[in-house]
Length: 116
Length: 110
Image 1 (cartoon, rainbow over the protein chains, first blue to last red):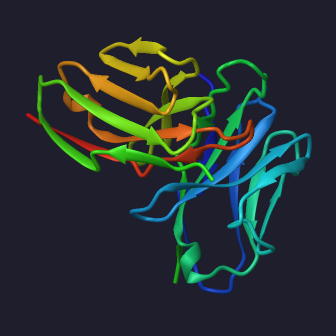
Image 2: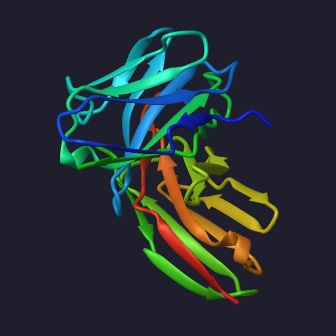
């Protein structure tokens, strides 16, 4: 069964460093998403991406964040200069983008980012 | 902005017993999703409800959306250890994103 994959599973970085979180969405999907979950808190929407551009982004997704689909398979989230409060589990998701259908988003296993 | 409130926050249930988790929205729901979260496995889709009064079942899990489309319940019958995890309800205020409840942590006691 096709699945969304994410690498690495755990990333430890120093404050101020850049990190890139990688995702491989399901191959025929058209919409891609990033969410994050700070330990003990709600899952929060960060950004959605369609047709090689950002569709929507939340207030969390400031200038320190960027997303890219560098090739036909990867979808990346970059944090330019990490802060302690960026420590969280980051989930990537994708869906078919077929309007009117169930529009189930398929989630990856997450990348745990720890900023020291 | 729309908010989702889940109750209870956590639940400990004897194996074999039934249980219900609730999700209440501050606004009318146009799509309500139930996901289950287990560490290392991401978020697993359970069900999606769209119509008032709709009810869906998958194995021993049944989800309902009330007629007013502001509350959903998830019911598990004859709970098993495999049901343990965090259950999250999500809603889509637009076609592009999901907003989430805080989750209900379910522990199954053998």
